[in-house]
Length: 361
View (cartoon, helix red, strand yellow):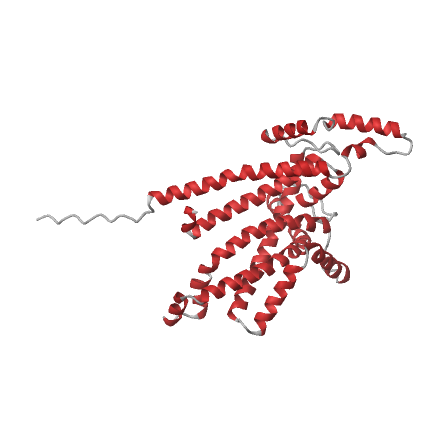
């Protein structure tokens, strides 16, 4: 007598409607990226034309041996060569056409390609932002958890006070304080640039750590980290204060839930309760804050890179604004915006993974 076949066990799978909802939510958010970039490109184009001054004034040459008439003629020639003599709507149409075809033009000063300038500057900003994010997350999460677990004690009060002060101080103030204390008084750390000028560095990717590996030049790593510490810490401190407050509030909210009390009643150690239950269920608001604060870091890098003369997109943007270098400013602003939008898109995707209920929103 043959044995009856065992029933086939099927793996549980997500319903088709949920998968469709997830894909549609991802596609819908993806469609918003070009809209955001178009709006920003338009705002930057208008803002640059509204600023007083003109790039042609610098290009015309203001030497003492030139008469006012000669300077005016030079300005007219420069304006025609740059296409700035065209009506504003014509300039805007040309700009959008170039943007659609990924033509970012050349700098008004030096005729350098905007793409090559961004290729040189973008790695520095990414290095600085990632380093600042790492420091801010470590400081913010650790201090936030400690403050929540020691609620009402002097540790909690001190942590919240320091977090509030660090979050309230502007980046340029933190940068100046860091330069004066650690660069001038104590002379512990360098305060300018990404690498010492004495080092012979020929970039391959312009990511210093990656180039050190590719070129087998590990002597670059130490000086690079030394130059990165002050600007990264300056950026991180303000963000860390905000993360501390969010983590503290989120952990306190989860600590009051029934499943945490149940876990303690089962005899789990406090560290296991915090690690397996509290932190795991506190990540949703923390992830949201990290995504938003990444954009703040990109904005802060504009100031920080200028204060520390750190080669990045932020410093390139400031120099472009001061010179009224329209193509450079437009390209740098779009690069920063694209980084911000892509990071927020990634955070949205992670948020939907952590909380499937959002897919239907």
